[in-house]
Length: 337
Image (cartoon, rainbow, N blue to C red; front, side, top):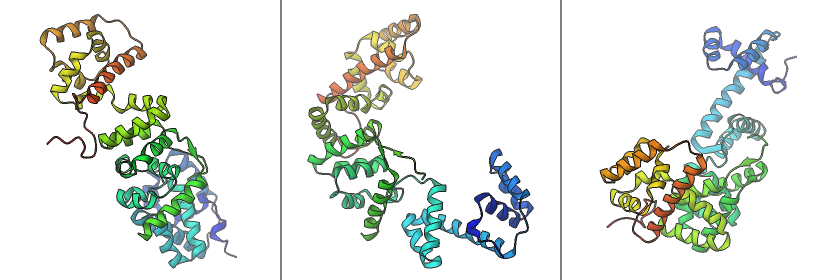
């Protein structure tokens, strides 16, 4: 009696497949495996009993279907792959292959949506609960999320931004259900560990891509509802190293507003690009003074450097608020005409 292919373990299937490929292809395959995987496969091959032709054919056929399914997923996502496989193999077998690929590929949730146009996603999610919108945006590409967040009604923007920043973990079941709903709506127009997403860094990346008007609206609302969160976001919106993105006039203005001590401490561990950008916008005398202070400076705690850099960033953000300095952002709000 030929054993059912479904009863074989993954190692047994891999061993049968490799022996079916022949020595040359098997050797090439082993070159791409880790030492542990090689040991497991070598043991699996050594333990193989007689493999019936029907059994070998079943393993090879399953492998081919898995490869095809992977290609289908790359083209149109899991739902597209499922539809194709169901027509070819039936619902049960299709579901088995899809589930196996989901586990093996460890595809990041909403991978299908990252290929979609932001406007299409907006049309699908804009009527959903703010928590649902936040969850979806936290998994998308930051540029996509920025555009979608900017397009939401102003009264919803800060709420969604706050939910992204405070998001901790979401059960895989909830994510899977939501994926199916969103993917189904878009088509119409891993492991069981909890999936972590969102957080302050996620909303900082999103806000960095929105236009200045949207950012002001969101931060202004957050300052009222959650001032600590708003301050944490603002601290990370523009980091000290981003000073190289400012134009020379803005850099000279910033330099004129900060103390030499803060400048020296901040530049002690700065990159050469940052140092050169700042030094070329200073007088030779002040450059010599700052360089001398850096040379004479003893060891510093990282916290001291970060605090000095934070004070300079605060000056930059204040000058931006007054309109004296412009930070490049997404959208068209800050275009110079």
